[in-house]
Image (cartoon, rainbow, N blue to C red; front, top):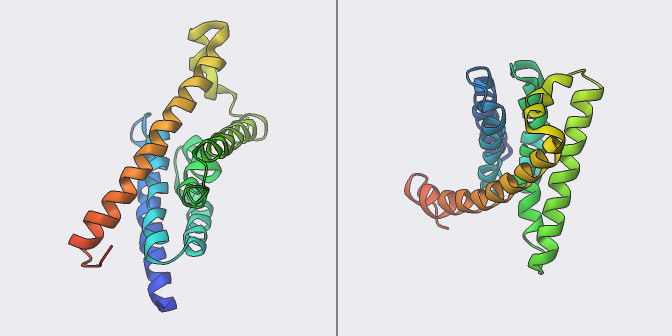
Length: 180
C-alpha cells in the first residue's frame, strides 16, 4: 500500500500540471475545448498509480483552483462539468459487461453534463455570447452543434482508451520502470 505522502505528492503534481494546461486557455480560442480534455486525462495517472478516490480528490482540487486561474470561463466550466471527471467515471463505466449499456451510459453522462454546463453558463453567469457564432448555421445551428459535440465525444472516448494504454504499457514501464 502506498503511503499517504506519495498520494498527496502525486495528486499535487498532477493538479499543478492540469492547472497549467487550463491556464493556457487564454492563448488561443481552440484551447477552450482542447485544454480541459488534456487536463482531465491526467486523472488516468492518478487512477492507475493510486485509486479512483484519489483521482476524484485531485479532480475536486483542480476544479476549485480552475475557477481562480483559468482565463477562459467556458473552459473552466467544461473541465468542472465533464472533462475533469469523465476519465474517472469512464473507468468505472468500462466495468459494465454489455457494450451497448456502456455506450448508453456514456452518452447520457456526456449529454446531461454538457447541457447542464451550458445551462449554468448561460443562465447563471450571463454568458449568452457562447453560442453567438452558431447563428451563421441557421435555424438548425443548435442541432448541428449537438451532433458535432456527440461525434467529438465518441472520438474523445476512444482517445482516452489509447491514452490509458500508452500510459500503462509504454510510459509507465519505460520511464517509471513499473510492471503493467
